[in-house]
Length: 245
Ligand SMILES: Nc1ncnc2c1ncn2[C@@H]1O[C@H](COP(=O)(O)OP(=O)(O)OP(=O)(O)O)[C@@H](O)[C@H]1O
Image (tube, rainbow, N blue to C red; front, top):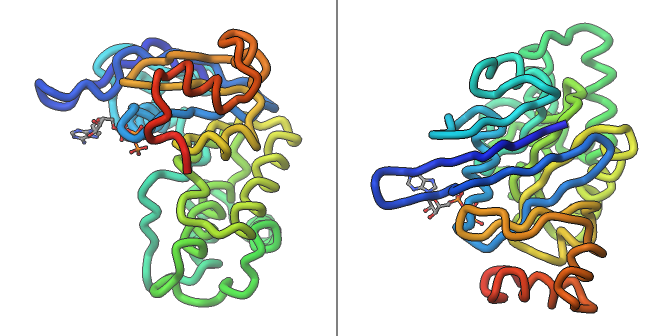
């Protein structure tokens, strides 16, 4: 479970990226962080996975404070960051193995886990190719495999389907549903409302660094009095700018 508590982050004097973000992402639930470009989603995610230190507020990962005990919090997290930097000379399989080793896995356990992920992410064809020259979709799959190799209880994904074709998007969605069915806490960010609507049990809408709505798709529709989720989002944010594909 992940609890964001009054997160604040400014960059310099002029940019307030995150004003006051609080939400709880439960286990066995897919929580979507939805907001237009520049809303503060990536900055929020970075604070959750301990890359950026909040100016104020904090977050708890399975009860562990990310500011006070970042290393411990990181062990309980699998992260697909916004930058999917890969090592060009390592193969897809070597990426997953390397990250598994960093998390203390080895031997047959690690081999089995990596094989499972290669199948789940449908990446057998690229398993033993070096990452240099990988397409965007292939890069996302490798980054996803290394995020999940240690079987984290909590999974944070920053715009996981960005740049993916229809088939790859479907396999990512299937994987996220599987993580949910396994009882994991899944949080992903997106600026595409159709993406969030297709996957999420719970939606946290962020605009200008603040949470402007938080609830199930049905609750969001009911609170705005709109029949379609799309209209409900527009009503919540006050504009459809940046939310459509
Ligand atoms: N390192 C940084 N230095 C200065 N400004 C930053 C930095 N990181 C983010 N910002 C600013 O903070 C605001 C929120 O950015 P953030 O990347 O969190 O938004 P986002 O919701 O993820 O947007 P997108 O959908 O475009 O990725 C933006 O105005 C951005 O320019």
